[in-house]
Length: 94
Image 1: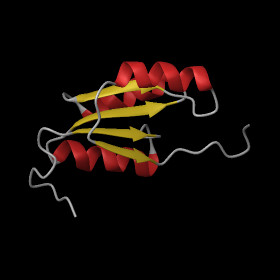
Image 2: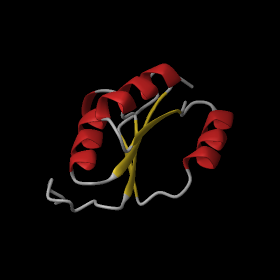
Image 3: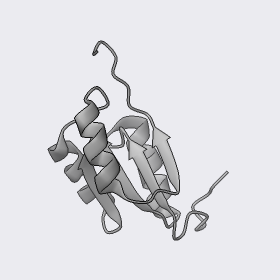
């Protein structure tokens, strides 16, 4: 288990669905442990706001898991990743 003692220092963590709820909690703990964090939401404004709440070392990007073109853009924009956490879902969506 990674604690807040720097176990993620110099790592890049992507939290898909990280703008709220459990995903945001994972992002908070990851930042506290020294990781740079990317949080996502279908809505870019929510992702950016969440990243601002996390402070320096956090970035917010839009990602809609139901939209293949959004996934493609995200894969290009995000760059290298050390850890990927997915708490998002597309319940009731195609």
